[in-house]
Length: 223
Image 1 (spheres, one colour):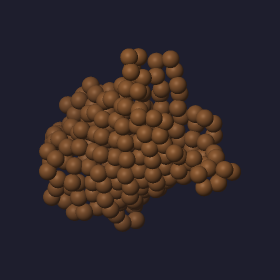
Image 2: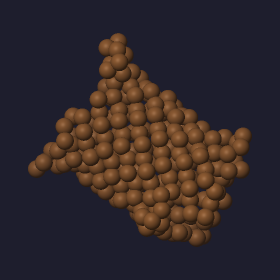
Image 3: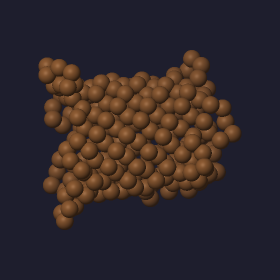
Image 4: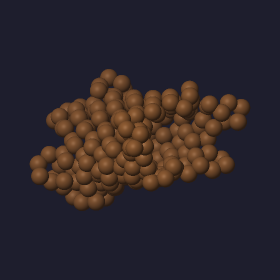
């Protein structure tokens, strides 16, 4: 997956490379904490803070919230909202808001756990134009035999612009995220992950592109 990201970068007319970091906290749990009858109901709360320009500049935050329903112990459907404030160097401040449905499927296997997440965003960036952007994630977690609390983590998420908009860019490929790292499970309620994230971004005209080399740290809370 990482090689795929670099091959896409090699095709770009002009590639800007940068270093930074992402930090996130993700909380997810059952609504049975409110009412036992809502056991199949789910809630998803997430916050992120992102830095670029070799860690010298905060450029983006993210707040995401959703409610869901467990179709089974493996499949969940979601309806959610995302706020994405962005202040890129030399550009105007943008406050993007998204609404989206999503589907997640978790597949345990003998070698580890695969997770598939499909999310279809409606991006409200500026003006009346709405950009439609599906994104697909494939994630794999492999606990190590000598220490089951320690896991190898790898995932990839691919974004596509369905339509062309004034502020959201031309239709086609949008961006790709590739992560590789380690996770530590403290108990059934807390897990931490850290590693390398490669973010490849295509610009509005598919000509000038950016690759972020990022250190990513995450805390997952289950309730």
